[in-house]
Image 1 (cartoon, rainbow, N blue to C red):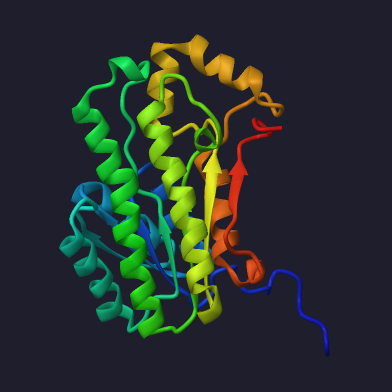
Image 2: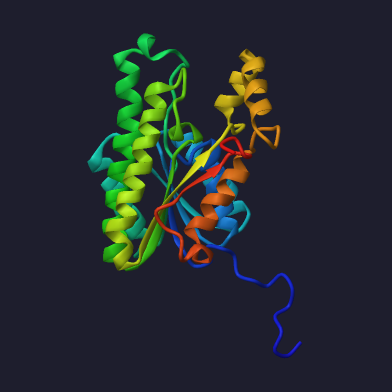
Length: 262
């Protein structure tokens, strides 16, 4: 029909973008990788476990998408830089990045938290995001010129989180890094946002639900939508923030929590 686009021909949210995703071997990261590829991005996945990454890449390629992976230690600056350099080698630029990688530790009051677990969540969830984000900003600036980054935070970052003190503190730190990077790099056209998922049915939460069903049921009872999210619902929010459809959104930490903070 002359002058009218046929239904279903609208480009994907991330068409022609080159996307880098950390923690992409499973859970929200793997779901995001598959979604970003369906939305038109060429994706490069990063994590520590090669078998998981290879499985996700194979799934994306089987569906006609463009995907590669790179083994990455997200606690090591040189490893992160090498991963970002691999993106540039493969695609000559970086447009968008989703810093999803993170770890949790057993739920316990802070007085019982171990120094080992404190150091683990701080190194991966805080330092790892800082190292990833700074490497990505340099790469975007040097290649695509403009772009977007989304960091994965948590609804627990907004208030006290009994039983999750060190974990929630690292996520609050991610919010601060996000806001600062948005303010510093907005003038050059690099947007930086975060998402703050509520209860999400990743493998970790499913195992927790099997071990302590009452705990997850309680969280769902506090959530106005009365359920947990599926990983694809979180990935959709990240995809939108990375896309040009969110072109005037930066410095935001977006709750994707079923109304838990309402």
